[in-house]
Image (cartoon, rainbow, N blue to C red; front, side, top):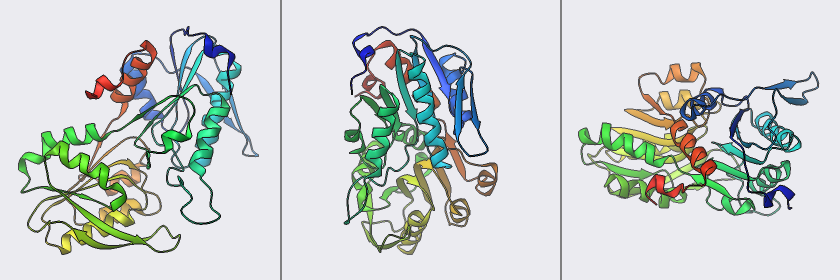
Length: 329
């Protein structure tokens, strides 16, 4: 697909639009950039159809649509697509979909017969709607980047989480060790361990059937009499991480800290985490957490904002400067 305006590399100023999925984060990004959020109306008709109306022109502008696709997933996704198409029809010069949490990230391969690769479908939909670029944080699988034909910034919030841990928690930890919640996360887990200068251990688990529940099995590595930092990219129902906590505790771990990027916490995920023998949870605001869920985890959860990072990347993308430099890459 070739948009004729791609040859015109002239963009106006930054214009920020926000879907209804993550208003607080959008507001913080706007604050970081010292730019107001552009006014637009999102109406849901009685038949559940969505309607978007921009309150001002975006013609010729460099537009960023900030929308997460966590729960309600399909409403948030459709809103993102409709908003992108609205901006395309209003002749925005360049449209970047800023999606802190990208839905369907786990449906990234055919790992059994007769199943979809929905993550690829979502990428196609974002492109067809009219996005020129995309930005996202910590997708579940790296190959998601290959599902897009448009350029994107695939960022990680690990720098943020590691910085907080090193500065505030590590000094008082006893022989700390990083534990990867499963072998799939082992490579990223190793990066955490290297950046925090800690050894690593792994939990090997085997899934049974298509249930969201998995069965944790063996611990590879040493956690006895050590403080443990369990790392993962997202926590959904909290099943895997609860098993991980139990496994390290059974193996003699001291204090347990949970570190993950996306706090989805669906169903009774928040209750499950609240009932675990853990010291502290460190996560980000890439998906909204209800007041009720926060209340359950009060005193034991630290939420770091990804807004300054996303704001800075938006600024660099707009000015055509390197994003890698931001992370010394």
